[in-house]
Length: 357
Image 1: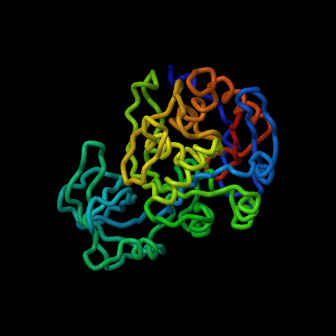
Image 2 (image 1 turned 60 degrees about the vertical axis):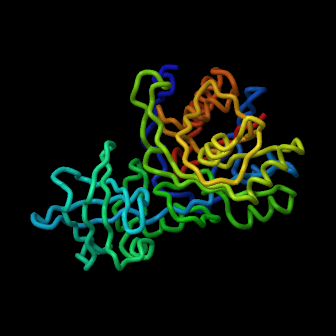
Image 3 (image 1 turned 135 degrees about the vertical axis):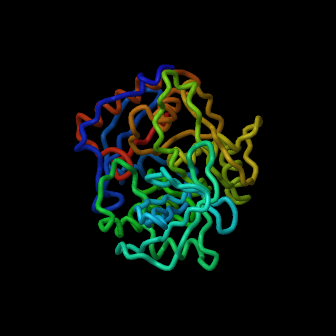
């Protein structure tokens, strides 16, 4: 399929710059795939779309305050560092901006949140073919403790904020069930849930299984080639526990629904399912690119946000709108057009969509 088929015009004012006042106060566009019917509801109405025996599969990855600032040794030039993934103890792959004139051995002094130099230094020791730098972090520092002290929440590039205005995002750009530190972007479909809302769903007989996928910066990478099949997909680490695998397998065998909360949960489930439709406990990496046409083996319903034009996430949602076919793209683009007409809020802090039969 042509990448241009997944493009659309979005008024800039519909890009949500801040979260809703309450997590569950967002709107919900419900898409019935078979009937090709759309319904405009509130997120609280999600409970009416679910039924006893359903299993929500959520991504419990936690967003790190992974953006730090500093200055280069020597010329004192300012540098922004985004830690993306641990390579080995004390060493992390990072994105640097600007990345010019940074050679192996170059030292960078880190700043605190007020912009004051600290006693912490990092050193560039390698650079890979994708342009990421391998940095040696301070030997004496606990990385996650260091980030909690001097790091900023790495908000998406379409959220334009002063760094001083990001402290509240440490809570709001995080799901209420986030546990496993490692993401640089939130699994945003889960941002709408509150603890009491989840408790109410559980009281209805709806189960919750947690998986982990650490979301990398590649999630924001647009598809730039003319045909979507030529796009090189980014790779991310995931984990499925024995408890989660058992819950998912038992739900499928009982003929009940698996509801993926977000595209990251969807990618985990579709990556980990074997030819018999079963899921085994595992730690693995995935570069799965789900686009039309795709035969889904596990997931029966999907909760997701609204995604960027020409993004792999929009293509995933389009594939799910008609499993095994290509016409789901038309239904999704119709839904997006209605969402724009009705002034829905888009992207990470925006409103939600629920696709089911």
